[in-house]
Length: 324
Image (cartoon, rainbow, N blue to C red; front, side):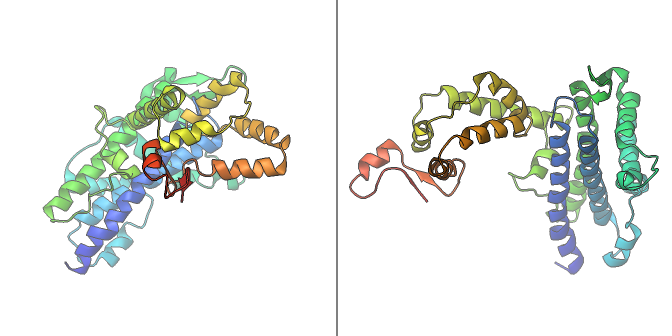
């Protein structure tokens, strides 16, 4: 394997994982609340999506170029002109994108060139939130935007997120498939992804419309099933027995559903943090310290919890409980 092949095989392989992680983060931000309209939410979605698309475009171009001097070739793609980069890809693939996908590329290009620092630029004309709203309105319809009942501001509805997820998902899948096809022709393994990685979830998404939103839907269902299991299952393991042995705090049961809304959207609700902190203030420092030490074992992969059967067998040799 020569230097060029090593670069295409290993460096681009790592780059694919990075691009997939950016796309996955874009998805998480898109689903951080039921309707997104805050500037930081829109900015971070567009930023992560833009970086993901640009990195994939450049991976495609590296694999398809016939030039041996990749250092010189790199200088020809040192830009953020997504439309131009895609135009070069078309010369290799001959495949055209849909109207929505081309519009997405244009949106991300304009954001990356004009919007990244618009809040730091006095009198800047670019408004990322307005640009995103205009994209949704033009590509999917006015009804995909909803007005906040109090402020009157528009926000991206859940219905719109599905269409956005389809457009971005199909665009990313298109580039990944070009990468996989070319890598196989060159007998390289650039396209291989870790099975537990964000990139694997994004690029090998097998939903019928390749919607990134389907990833969030599956994850939310899985999380909901875990919550139901922990709440209702009578199964016993060392860990479950340990978990059930912890005396619960007297949280406000009326707020649990609100907390779960945020948790299902991959956020820890600040109101929950505040409630727990308030309860801790009424506890002694020693109780807080002991409870904190116990809770640190929850979700710790380096801890092994003995099951009852194991404890019975090894009772003469080991004490009950968790071991590190």
